[in-house]
Length: 254
View (cartoon, rainbow, N blue to C red):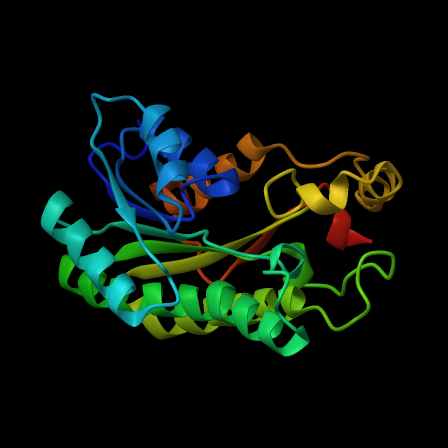
């Protein structure tokens, strides 16, 4: 087991990539605090895990300084330490409340995707320093590395702006905390079917187009993203920090 007795927080653990990471990390022996704003989704994730390995639920709004601080403290109190943080909580403009105008959508997306990652890192780093080090993994996106395809975005997508911020947050933290033995990396997944992409990919024409943007000709599987997350969070990646790793079937190589 690559993560036996490691203590982990996963935000956005209720669905998608966060849930996939929780399931794989659980198989690898990690003790996990599952965090999400949707408690019913947390119940589903927890129900899929091995009950013989410690997993706890914590309802958390990552845009809240109070909630994120309390989540980190809860993990320390419950698990004794914090070795790994995965910032997976995220939203997309397509899923914004219908009553939001363009400015409110921008604020909402940046608040969850970028500020949420920043707040979690802020409080986690304090505890990791006390613990002698740790690993942080931010879930960014290929759209944090390149612009959206013109078929999908008008060029003013808050999602791209937020994920670009996560990419730079990762680089800056990696340099700043390297001497504290805290590794900070991000994953930049290609398109994968999750709650964030369902509304887009239900259009068969768009789905065909999106697949064609990946040289491998298909979408990513959730387990493929989770496997990359496991590598970057494990000791197998002990000399890797500051990397924004595309897991994209060649999308960003074009």
